[in-house]
Image: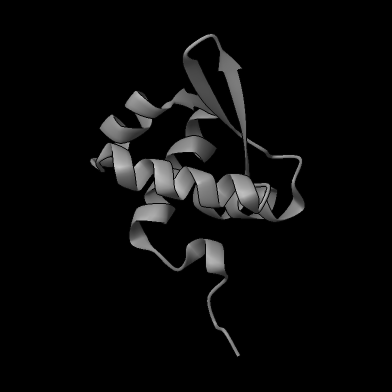
Length: 84
């Protein structure tokens, strides 16, 4: 039995989740600055979070914005936990 939800099993991923949960929408550069993680790691965690429907990727030309999907019940609960 897994004690920790897969989306929370990495300190780096938690940093990305926390950053997006508190800011709602950011580009990858701002996520990198807020988490002190490199581009490759941030991109890896964003892909994972996108696949489990925690975030949404919006593209404006060459710019990608990542939005925390608070309408996802699990993501909403995680955000409430972070806010506590």
